Length: 527
Image (cartoon, rainbow, N blue to C red; front, top):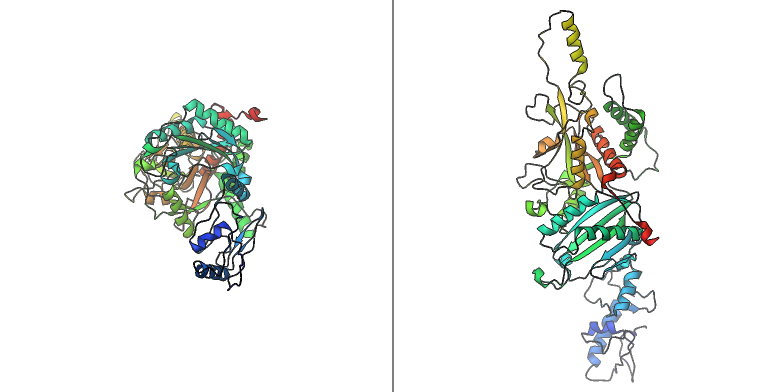
């Protein structure tokens, strides 16, 4: 349909106007048929004046309406991306069928590529059409943030630590005063069915509990019932810290950098001057190390959530999103929250933080600068079990009857893994697993002794740590190489550290070998 531009008309002349265009004149349509025609006679004393003004506006706006499947509305006053920048934009009133047709047509590429399957207890069905991954607008999770969620990692067709994530999900529901839509076993069963329907072998299962739809008030009493949503999505193709320029030729400087850090990494794994780790383990961890790229962080200017809300994994992530936006605007990739007192490190926007700090062997205090995890400046670190060579030497000296020298025994440094206390931050399932790794002695060959410390860590101590890292189920372990523009780490400041690489490898290995906490997805249900 084409709108004839306004001009003084002679005789009975008819203008064909879409129903939506009547909004320009402030008059309602006679009915909802968008192809309706309305006759306007220019000689009418009642509406002639208004008609002239309407057509004049349409002329200035250069409005053109095209019909058909590829219908589009173009206006001179519209921005280049299709959004209208003035009050004259007049979307049509359509049926539910037409609405869903349009939604299907404009589904964005990322959704079509990465969003595999979706379940809503509101409709009680699973769909693999990404344009149908929707929830009611009056759902309190949408307009009040009254909802909680959790995420389980999917690797090689198995969900990692599903029980832990579901347990935390139910704790979050309790704290958020949301009645669980299902019990724990049914919830896990639904998550597995969604994963199977989506067919992904690598990705994440994200599941949500909402207070439910029912209105736009604050009081959840109006909600019809709580709702469970679950979606399976592909693993991020280029996570933060990954090298997105793999096709570009490396400069001589970057190659030299890689060789120096590789040598440093290999040195970190040597137990003493005559022994190295087994070849296969060394190469696995070296491969992990060379794939990891460090990230830059800044101390966030965004106020942290109060402890009660920080310890609930809710969908109210406005502060978290602003932390990321603030970091990006300052040239960094992530922001780090401080606790309410402004003196201690809390967490990242959606992940925990961990540090390798030096501790005097005598147990007096702890310091970030007590040496380094590859034994430089402090002598070789043997994992905290004493130096057998020294003891054997002393025994042989005594057996010979030679007097023992009275040289003062030097304090030797060991290292601990430290993460902020979970009373003001979210208790991450992945960082809790890393604490277990440390306590099991996984990193003793790097001088990391247990137990891991979960407690307060000052900003100064964090910035001067031997290593700093971000830890989460989606990002795995990302080393922090700069903080507020200054290089982090000792002795290789600004480089990926050996402990962070070892932790990243241990997490990746846990996805495959921690059989008690791997839940197979029943793909056979939909094959």
